[in-house]
Length: 397
Ligand SMILES: Cc1cc2nc3c(=O)[nH]c(=O)nc-3n(C[C@H](O)[C@H](O)[C@H](O)COP(=O)(O)OP(=O)(O)OC[C@H]3O[C@@H](n4cnc5c(N)ncnc54)[C@H](O)[C@@H]3O)c2cc1C
Image 1 (tube, rainbow, N blue to C red):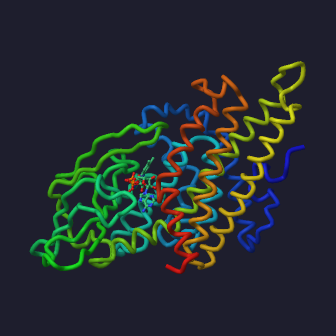
Image 2: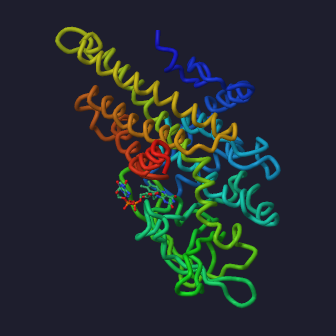
Image 3: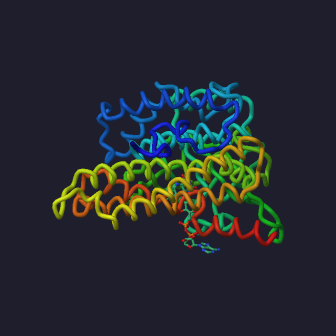
């Protein structure tokens, strides 16, 4: 018998959290996730071809209508508003299968939510249904070479021109879906302000075929479509601005507020898979005349990470439910993202250790998980930045 909190279905894990009237919808979603995930191996995706893999995954996710979780009902979505909890459930399932699949899913949300929040009606009608249908691939471009954790260091500049438009110049780095996306939400510093004026940050939508926009691929330790976005005097019509002048950072933060907790859920998915691989291996591998699962040292090690994994699930779903109920306290989300990503790293490391040499053999699931889980402690706010947020709530500033 396996512990309830390892049941494949999150809703059957007896977490003791009150999912309220969301339960029926989430149970139905898990039935769809189970069916979808069972079909993923048959897609035969080569994840080393990162752009082709992204296109295949986005098309498959769209066909299963899962991308509809990422836009509001009025624009082709499934629910009235975009909610963190169902996205968490979906990411937990997808990450058990593949990090690249999880990225293909969530980027459609991260790259479209600023449009949902601040796009013109015409832009929303043009883009959001297409993103939900997988006809357009989305990206969210905030980070720059000089502006990582401190986004106010941004140098990309959006300079107003006569006639109400603007020109965009600068460079973004570590942008998921760079080069494969059709649709870019780009954050930039306002140009043309008085030299002593405080900086203002804004956001704009830029289609991939805009003259002056180019891309350079970057390769990270696990398959992930990512790269630089270079903007050389790109024309931005007034209708493509997202929100007011000076509203860019607020918009970026409002977007991360919905999606940051879901990074924790992806970490849960990696940890789920790692734990099940470790348990299966220890139960069957015989050394010193008996299965390794009989060795108390190994049993205790698994007991430690299983406990952490349960704690991580409680924090993630508690934060997601709070957010979906209108609680905007950033500390719950920060604690969830921090703990779930850090503990998933420990769970995966323990799984690698449990498999011995097999654990570091290319092609083994836990070897891949070891590479896949690492970036989660870095993107959408590093662990250190989550600690800054938590400390701010402790000290009141
Ligand atoms: C796989 C992946 C996908 C990504 N996708 C996107 C994307 O789609 N869009 C996007 O805009 N960005 C994306 N990023 C960028 C990511 O958000 C940044 O890498 C992250 O915010 C950290 O910025 P940095 O890499 O410049 O590190 P830095 O900010 O330079 O930080 C370096 C180290 O210093 C620590 N540090 C920084 N400031 C402090 C402080 N005040 N106190 C204590 N420690 C501190 C950090 O925690 C980190 O450990 C992605 C990154 C990765 C790895």
